[in-house]
Length: 233
Image (tube, rainbow, N blue to C red; front, side, top):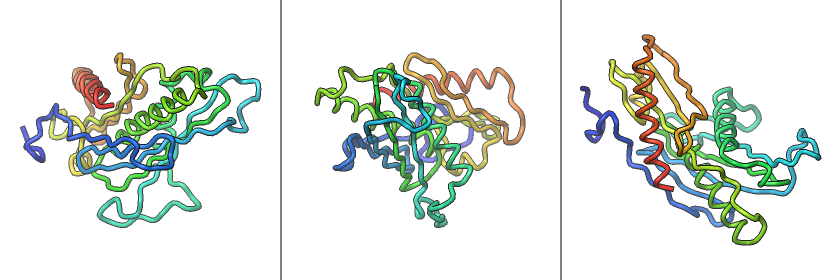
């Protein structure tokens, strides 16, 4: 077994911290930390829905915007001011899909939730941290609207969380940092509900292919980790 940073076991999460109400003006906000990955996530809720939705549609909507800030990595990246990269679009859609899946959109009503995830420091797993932070921020925002009498009840169906798993040198490892992720033969990002239902199971062989036994081990490892992450909300 190869040694991991801080002597972390293969089935062990990095230290996760969630600081709630991190900003003053957003309805819901958190600073979420997975090891050295840090993401500020805010939830804003506005009246009205996207123009493409029919006015008679009883559902509300949840969307997301993701940004890797210029100094979040060792090499400064350019701000995406006019053109969004394919990677950013993919992550934004993943965050939005994941969060919509756990919300009763009809109970949300004629409203739009926008999740903004800004990565201030990246060390692997930014999309998973953004999903977890997005859920936490959205839940804070919904509870505030319930307390204000604007929503009758919190429209969240059940909590969700996300985590990465990879195969490195034949070993299955949970919650990869950047160094591990860059050497992974198999890379997986998994989003699940508290009850164990799968929302996303993105698993790709970057090097050698994997078998069903390894796939089952990846699922079991992620399922247990996601339940532990949800306890931190």
